[in-house]
Image (cartoon, rainbow, N blue to C red):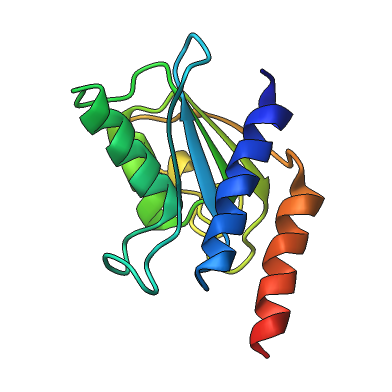
Length: 149
């Protein structure tokens, strides 16, 4: 599978979030061999807690299921640019590569906002690829928030 195919899986998760009236963000963690380790979507509004972002949930599930403290050499696909909390979690989990779709101009922390991975205090800086299926990811978010207005 390629980046677009994995992002389509993340979009599927994001649509599940929207169906649950959650902010439609989905994430997928992929092993170095291309195996899908976990998929997840936001569930902070009606689920566990405010920190239940798709990225954190997918990384946590991957680590627990594989009995690993870190996710060395794994790739994280997420439909929206991660926030500062998620960027810090990505760094702590030692994700090798982050691929995201839509930019998050207000709350993003990778190419917008605080640019967490560029800070000298960041111990692990993953490779970043952005803009994969960005229009599809953005449209899903826009449609969701328009329905709330």
